[in-house]
Image 1 (cartoon, rainbow, N blue to C red):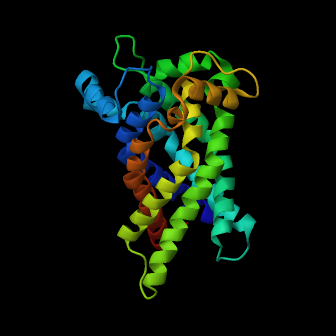
Image 2 (cartoon, one colour):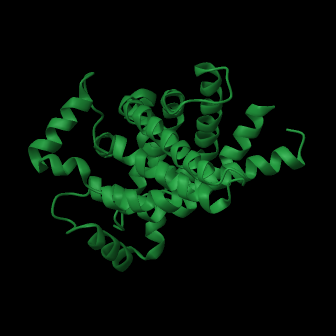
Length: 283
């Protein structure tokens, strides 16, 4: 029943991640996809969003990940638990083994993360105009392009992002967690140390994959589906040609800021809910 524990705890952790991190995620996504000259910077995105659309606009696109996060994070944490057992049968894993298991879990996670983020990006790419659509209408519009070019658009760039991202995410978390335990060998790890370790893991996540996340967001928001097997490289060249290499890092600051509370909440809620369920249920 270990997998059931991982699935339930992963759902709780995912909901915490979305609620805590959505406002900065909206700013990050808009920095990546907004037309050139629309905003002067991250603070201007925040100010204009509040002024023109109201504070709730910072939570645009939250319904898609909130509905899907149970599946996404459940799949992620369950895949990670299984991957660790595949990588090594021994309970103690090296950081290299943790990174390998994290990458394997990331590849599996992309199956659900890609469509969930497709709809989130589409919602966040609306700026309060009269023709803005609700999630149901966005889904119908995307579905017109079919399953592969519509709902699953950007799947392969999501896979390319998730593998290094979750290798760094889990390795960073374990590294910080083990440092704390080494410094306090006679104590169980407290919530604040879990939050700190999770935050460090979140920062590692974005530093390992950020340009690929920019490419993914742009591909998923584009009016037409990408063509050819080289669409990732084509979008990379387009960004560099139009904006320079700095275009690959637009929105990085709010992403790093978001990762501190969001990843911290994710790991803390996963560990706490996992411990609670282990103690008080028969799962």
